[in-house]
Image 1 (tube, helix red, strand yellow):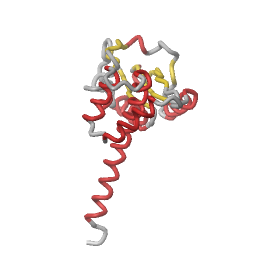
Image 2 (image 1 turned 90 degrees about the vertical axis):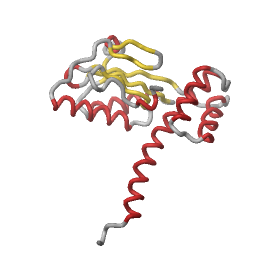
Image 3 (image 1 turned 60 degrees about the vertical axis):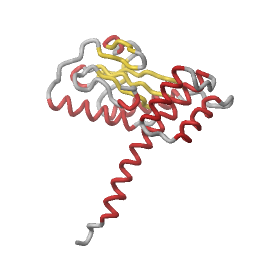
Amino acid sequence: MSGHSKWSQIKRQKGVTDAAKSRVFSRFARLIALESKKANGVLTAPGLASVVARAKAANMPKENIERAINKGASKDSSSLEQVLYEAYGPGGTALLVDALTDNKNRTTQEIKHLLVLQGVELAAPGAASWAFTKAGAAYAPNEPLMEGAGADEEHLGAILSALDEHDDVQQVFTNARGYETTNDENTGD
């Protein structure tokens, strides 16, 4: 039974789950810092309270939440900026990428590069947002597109997973049926 160590399996599985938790926690930390900055550190502000409740629901440690609140409330905190990118994917599906960044130019180039690798280009502001209605912090498709060919669905799935791996991306919205929202841990649903 060489090569079949229970410890190596546990270590590999733990590494995968830890990486996923880290990605979720870092997204919440950025969002909490942004809301804390808007609320000047007031914990009872509705936006901050909502994000903190969602982070607690995702089992984010209390120390991490407090550190993010303090980071956003400090006077010398870097300015986080929320940015919305638009693109069209395979089969004419509209994509909205909601990102939170401290350097808009860097993030724009990274998202643009990510999309070009997938065969998609960034669209001009307003080019894809017409297909969505803003509902709170989320975007709902006005009319979801019907599911297309298998190749288009696989390509769209690859694009969404590539965007999901980017640290600055908070949420990705699409009007393809079955892919209405990604990153559900950040939507509060």
